[in-house]
Length: 110
Ligand SMILES: [Zn+2]
Image 1 (cartoon, rainbow, N blue to C red):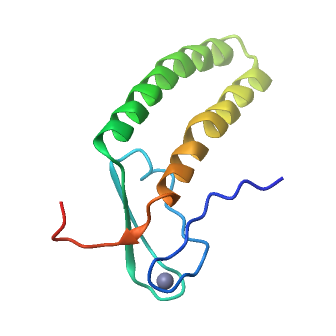
Image 2: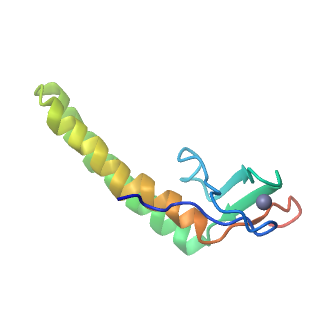
């Protein structure tokens, strides 16, 4: 089962536009189309961004405490499960959210 978290380039309609997951927690993420090499941007609305930040904070605090307890207790399988859950519940949806609104990068737009 593959989760499709790739968007479509607005210039050449090529699929496979992805944003790096380290950028996905910023309000605005940049990437380049692999086919036409145009700069692409995905910008979240303020409400969506604030919701994501709160969700990320809850996950970071809860996940960090659980991860610390698992590592200190030597429960490595449990620690891996927490990291996998973080990816599935936070990082993958954040990347998917980017692909909903891919537009050409315009440095003059706010
Ligand atoms: Zn393109």
